[in-house]
Image (cartoon, rainbow, N blue to C red; front, top):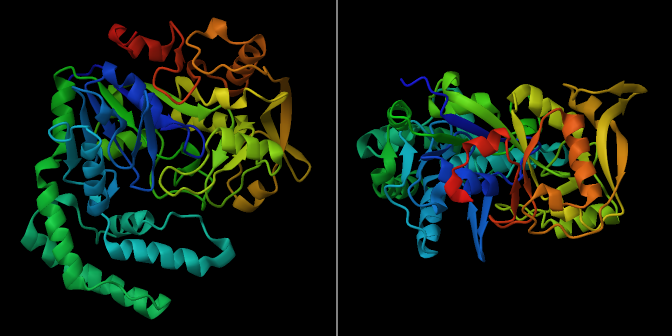
Length: 442
């Protein structure tokens, strides 16, 4: 293999929903391949260009760019029906989807019973629920981990799929009925539906591990796109209120089958404030008019679920955790413009937990629930920055806020979003991300 460090990994630096879709779409012209490496259709990446809006779930955010190969890696769990619906939606909007999309034959398949188990378990937890989207992501990863899962390579082979799916579907139907009183769909009907999905998806299926190795060996540039955020990582996030996969840069290696030696840079996407979906500790959460104003101005509603996101001030403890776990070389800061109309903006620099000042996210969720934010306050800029394309044009108070974020987190901000559109972005010259961008983008 070519030992050139031709891959860049993009990860969420908070609890997801940081704007990874926009950033990946923006920088994808500098890359030959964009690859998703974990998660499922619970993730929603929004791409806006001019007056067009695309909500992507499984397909990488490079799909709107000509000449870019998009790969759905082996680390994902895929509902075939959701993927086919997404392909159809893009095509209906005039986005070509064909040879520019490849689906790993090693990705695992989400069955209808996975989604039913997800919802039934969540309901059974009552007030102690995790906040899952009930789309079957966790149970599908569970099947993968206990080695009963079905992979895409199995799905596209009718005889093999039937031999594997029938016992698994029957077992999960029995569990649903016995423990939760939920009736699963007919095994035969499910099999027939999925056989049809397999036929429709077969043209997209490939050994993407081998494909990526071939492309990298030929000098291609690879952009690795993560879903969710480091604080939802199954190992390093706010467990148990996490997703079921590895959201950090390490997940790119296992989820795509590439070695760490090809990674040239890791960029963490962070909002200028913080949001979270679902249950779990959130020390900087705002329950007042300020939080509601940020939510509405930032359109903080789930791309996939439509659920209102919880909103709070920027949490530098969370950001520093992502920096350490992810080895971030730089930060891409999004939604700075959402804070345009505030008299004051805040950064949480530490927590108070039971009388102690803490600068790390605690392992135990009950201790994290007890955390109270320690803030630094800054004057707001009270001016619109929407559409600004140069850092020097920012109001002085906005520049001071950016500098404080860099100092508090410990990483440079290499890209700053000043609006939802592709063009509404500042890329700072001389930074690590700027070095990867093609001159043709300017």
